[in-house]
Length: 95
Image (cartoon, rainbow, N blue to C red; front, side, top):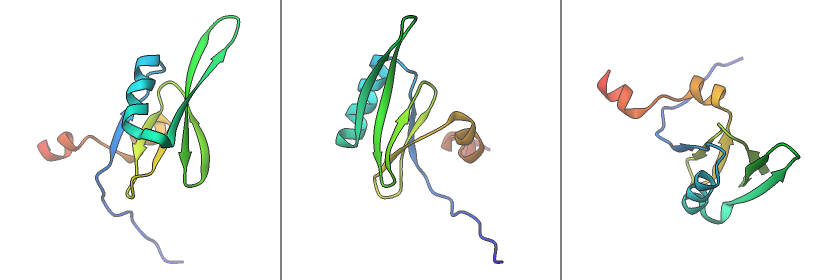
C-alpha cells in the first residue's frame, strides 16, 4: 500500500454559533448552496443550516465550521475534526 500526505491548501471558514444572526451571515456568504431550518421543541428553538454539498445535503449545528472548498463548494465540519485538521493562517505565518 502506498501512503500519501495531503497537500497544504488555504481554505475559508466561519464557525456557526447557532444564532439567527450567524446563520444569516453564513447564508449571505455561501449563497444558494446553503439554507436554514428551525427546529422547535418545548424547551428550545434551534437554528440549523442545510448545506448542499457534492455528496448531498448536510446539516450544520451550533459550533460546526462551514468551509468553502477548493472549487467553491461548501460543507460543514465538526469542531473537533476542524481543530485537528486546520490552524489559523496567522498562527502559521507568525510561527
